[in-house]
Structures are given as C-alpha cells and as structure tokens.
Image 1 (cartoon, rainbow, N blue to C red):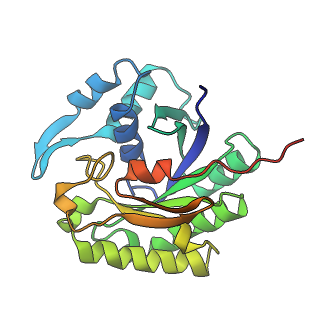
Image 2 (spheres, rainbow, N blue to C red):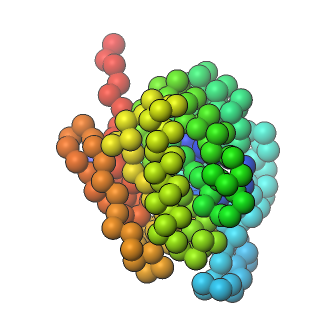
Length: 239
C-alpha cells in the first residue's frame, strides 16, 4: 500500500534550532542517508543533561560531503509511522516566499520554531520575525502549523517558560497571522538531547501533551513526532 507523502517547511529565526531539529529527526528515522549516523556520533559530547548531539553540524557535513548545492534548499526525507515526509529548512523570509510561491516547494504544513533560551525568542523581540514567518505561511496557503518551542534545556525545562511562550505566540498567531490556534499543536522540545522529539521526555514530565482540532475531530499527542503525524494531507482539487 502506498503511503501519503507530505512536504513540511521548517521556519523560524536563525539560531532557533531548525537544523538541529531536522538533524535529530532524520538521523533517528533515517534509512537512506548512509554515514549520517556516524557523523552524528562523531559530533557528540557529554553535557549536563547527558550526551549532546550537534545534529546541525552533522547534517551540514553530510550535505557538504554529498556536494549539495549550498544555495539550494535540500529536502531531508524520513518515514514517520503515518507518512513519508520531506523536511525543508527555510533560511529567511525571501527564500520562503520565492520557493513556495513558485511551487518549487509545495508545502503542506509547517513547523514554526521559537527558541525558549534566555536572550532569544520573545526576550529579544524576535517573536515579531517569527510571526512574520507565520503570516507569510498563511498568505502562501499553508493552513497547518506545528509550534515547536526549542532549547528547553536552557530554561532548566521550565514549565512556566513554555506556558509563557506558548500563550504569547498563540495570541500573535491568531491576531497577526489569522491562524485558528485551536488547530495548533504546541510542543516543548530540546533536539540536542532528543527530548520530546520522538518520545516523551522525563525532563518535562509536567507536559501533558497537545490537543488540536482537525477535520476528522480532535487529535491528541505528546512529542513532536506525534504533532508531525497530526498534520492532515491538504484537500487537493481534482481536475
């Protein structure tokens, strides 16, 4: 039986952790990137909360080794329990508009990444640009967004910080980007350690999961992988 394929853009400010998220997902769910797992291990080092993996460096080294065009937005492919997924890391607003509006990237959904680290995200005023990504996503017809609040380790896994960022960002998604926030899954993550990426995180036992409205009813889940599988295939027009 053929599986449904979805294209997911990963958007947000530089430094929010987009590459780390993609690297973590494709390395843990990989099946076609020979040598990537070795690069991940070579870029691992012990840290406060366990082994930290520099997934961003690993996938950049892999792309360089494969002689990928440094100016191209390369799809990173993976298989989830439900879908075949191509992830696209979007570096800035201009390339987002150009690649999606032209049809080069037919985006079916988006992961909007916001750093919870002190001095980044809301505290640095970067949420304005984060919402610019969300507004453009809506204008480009991307109706489904997953909100990933990253770098939770830097907050000491703070429930209060997550709730603050989730509340404020959802408010702006509704007011400035016209998204139905009841259809947005918000997930606290730390891709460097793999927390709440594929499985529930013991470091964030307070997190009870996300609930969102969908065409088929209410969906629930916990880690980011669940939220990705919660993206519904868009209804496409028949000729």
